[in-house]
Amino acid sequence: MESRRSSHVRALLRALPALLIVLGVCCGRLTPSAFPAVALFTAAPLVAAPLHSLRGTVVTGAAALAAVLAVHLGLAGLGASGPSGALTEALTTIAAAVPAVLINMLVRRNDARLASARRIAEAAQRAVLPEPAARIAGLRIAARYEAAQADASIGGDLYAVQGSPHGVRLVVGDVRGKGTGAVAAVAVVTGAFREAAEQEATLEAVAQRLERALSREGLRRDGPDAHEEFTTAVLAEIPHEEGLVRIVNRGHPAPLLLLPDGTVRELEAHEPAPPLGMSDLATSPDRAEEWDFPPGSTLLFYTDGVSEARDARGEFYDPAEGLAGRVLTTPGAVLAAVTEDVARHTGGQATDDMALLAVRRSERS
Image (cartoon, rainbow, N blue to C red; front, side, top):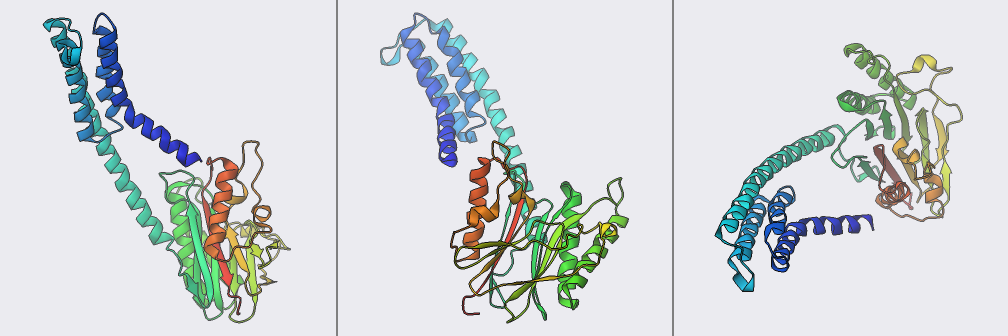
């Protein structure tokens, strides 16, 4: 509904220059003098400049000039007000059309720069957060990154999936802050995870490797906040052929287990732990918790852009409640359902990025 309304508004705006010219011709026909119409004719190319291509702006300016001459020369039965008035208003229209063309060229140049920057950001996103394989060790996997702003492509949310001798391991996290510092921390966390996931024997050891990587990054960087950054993260390990999942949660929203009958279980940590980068606040070492992961079930991991999405009344979206009773047979369908729910809940006005990762176990497992 929102996209359809937006497309109607864009179509109306694009038609506005032509409507101004038509209105100017009508005004010139119905009024004793063509003077009231000149403002409409000069406005047409200026309105077209940011909305149309260079060719469209030039055509609009030429059409406005032709309309001025038509009104003054009495074409198609229209009245004339003398050559001097025709020349004055023709020059006025040309004086508006020339800057309109220049404005259009400037807007298109800025659009090209923005498109180039967007392509670079998208390339950076693919490099830092590559799309995971659709299948790893018999598990079906889907990931999705939703930027809160249309022109943004990457921020502090992250995900990574890695096969290992101990099973499929994954991480979903959210780096404190925004900008290039957050992107650098994302690269550090995902890079350290991919290495540690293959080398470390336990999930707890993987978490400690990420802790040390963030600590080194904090020492390397300058600035007042360099040593105060942290990353909420949930790490999971799905062993081969065991029907369970091990989870270490470091201050992150709890993942959800979606059972084949539509039941949703929140895998809340029994012993809360601080985020990565704040291990000095921990009261005990990391300890992975085990949960059943039955055949046909789906694990959903997400960042707080989902669970902290607010509606107009300030109420948070609850993904467990939103997914309860729904039978979604693919991980991609789960992610689509959540993102659509969040967009509907916020009225399309989400204020934080979202990273989502869904892992489905085959019903034959």
